[in-house]
Image 1 (cartoon, rainbow, N blue to C red):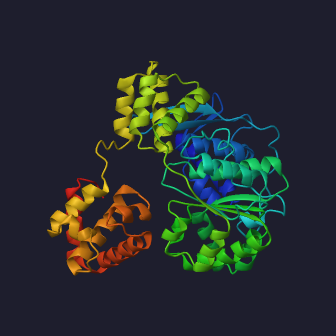
Image 2: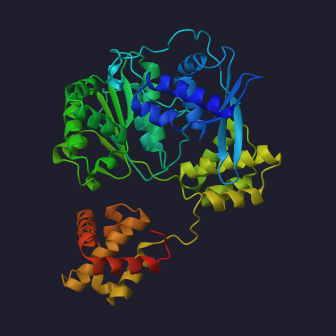
Image 3: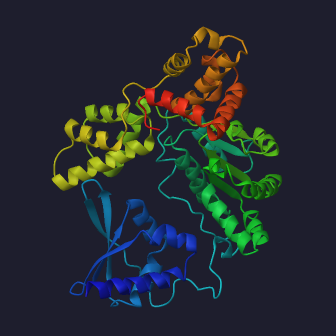
Length: 468
């Protein structure tokens, strides 16, 4: 009987697939797994991999899901989600979906012989793809993010009307970039409901462009994006090998820029380090604002943890909060992941959270590095390997051996310390950032073609006792 019910859920998925884009189906519905169906209670339980997917389904697709269920299950069917909260310990949480009112007719109109896409929406009525929970109120301010947050709020209140257009935000993974640019879109939409605001990842933009090229609808693709009032693109560093995508985006960018529409881009590195970026786009960025979002310091991590505890109604002792902040490597994602796992432990075992629980979670969720690698450490290892003194590396000599050590040190420093190129250059002989960028590029190219050199660099990396 279970197989029969699973097959019925498969039929529901086929109906859903006809009413959403292929990308939406792969992102939000393919991860769902059938768990069980109780005929006695008319309850269908579906497994979803995260709370975020559950919340997104509830917000955007619940009517569509119940409409599909009504075609293959009894009309009184109830939908429950089984959410995985801790894969390592197989911990889950079950939530009941909120059943919408009227579901006796299709929620969306199926487009015959054509897969619906984002561009099929009527003018003025697009899904902004924004996360309603990532707001300015939920973004905890500190010394490391005060300037970017202030600028972001100004942009949200006056999109396209400030000197911060375009706005390019960069910073390491986990520092809150996605939250901040999403908050701009949410607040802007609250103040200006009529504006067409769109948040999209660089990867999805590239997929859409590729599909448009394959279907000979590139003009429609460009026209759609040129109609946006506030365009937010995340993780643009992923366009490193997408030359045609970059060229097409420039045409969209240039059109929106000339019309005074707001453009917001986010990346894990500054524009000068994006080697694929065209000079004409760099020139455009210089007209707006390029802002760095640094990793939160320990105090800001503590503030973020306290704020999350208040929101979730979780009580964590101050010493445990401090311990987590000190060991989460300045990553907001790590902080939230640790708190979520502690919450799961507290619920499942009905126990208070203490240092013992925190240590167990931290060891499993976060890579603790008690001795972070420094530029000095790297210089010492590289110089020892090539038997060259640091004094020679710092000199202005262009002797081949000295240049090699200098370039390898800069390459490894950028790879492992996540320092900006300008700071690395200062610490290695007082060079400027362009020297560091050139050195890294030279080493990367040689690594691809010179096996002996690649083996040497691997040997140095192994001496760091770091996992590549």
